Length: 358
Image (cartoon, rainbow, N blue to C red; front, top):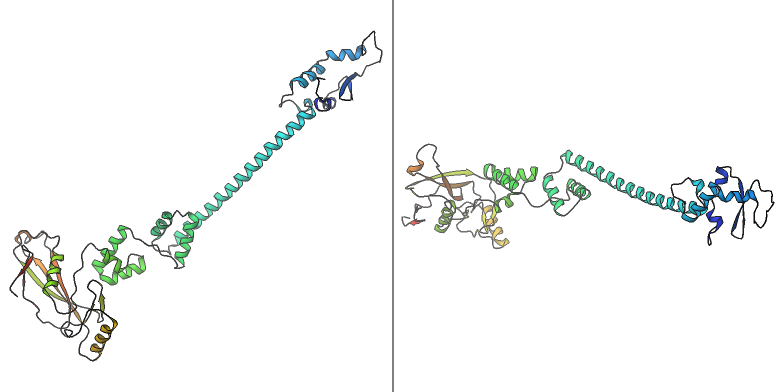
C-alpha cells in the first residue's frame, strides 16, 4: 500500500463477494497483507513469502487494484471496484444531487401551484365578466391596470363593483361623446337614463364637457346684454359672409312646473317672467328661496308653464337652394306663462352688434 493510505478505506473488499479471488487479506496496524489460498508456508532462501504468495504480485487483478489505489477509481466503474472511501464519496454526491432535485421539485411544484391558482382566478374573472352585471367593465379594468393591479386585484374590484361599493371614475372620449349625443337628441331625461342604466357620464358632467357653450337662461326680464351674449355664443363659429337677412322664429315648449337652480349665473329658474319682476331671483341665501315660495303660495307669483325659444334662421342667397348648408341658432330661452312682446331689435351679424331700433 502507498504510504499514508489507509487500507480500510482504499481496498475494494466487495471484489471478494463479486469474484472468486485466489487470496485472502490480513490487516495489521494499517498494513495490508495478501495470502494466497494455496500458500504452504514454506519460505525459500531469504524471501519474505512463499512462491504461491509471490505469484500474486504479477496477478492482473492485484495490479489493477494497486493502480486504482494510486490513481483513483472512475466514478462510472462498477460499485464492486469502489473502495469504502469511494462509496462514501459517491453516496455524498448522490445525496447532494437528490437534495438539489428535491428542492427543484419543490420549487417547480410551488410555481405550478401558483400558476394553477392564477389560471383559476382568470377563469373566475372571465365568468364574472360573462355575467354582465357590472357596467363599464372596460373602465374598471383600465383603472385597475393603471394602478398595477393583477387578476386578483381586478377580481376584488369586480366584487366591490358588484356590491355597489366601487364605481370607476373617469370616462373615455367615446363615452363622453355618446352622452353628449343622448343629451342633445333626447334631453336631460334620456341622458340621466343612460347614466343610470349604461353607466355613462351624468348630465352635469356632460354639460361641463360639452362642445357647445350653453346659452344664458333668463330668470326674469330679458336684458340687452343677455341677448347679445347669447347671439355671440350661437354664431361664434358660424360663417356669416354673404348673409343679408335672418328670420326670427318663436316657439314655446311645455316644461315641468318646478324651480331650478342655474349654476352659470346663480339664479333661480322656473318662475313665470311676467309675475316675478318684484322678486329677487338671484340665489344669495335661503331667505330668497323662502320669499319666492311664499309669493307662489300667496298667488302673487307662480311657476312657469312654458319656455319660449327664439331661433334665428339664415335667409342668405347661398343657402336658399335645396341641399345647401342652411343653419339656424337658438338665441333666447325664457320661462313664461303667456305671450307678451319683449323687444323689437335687429342684430347686425356683420358688425356683430345691435342697431338702435328698440
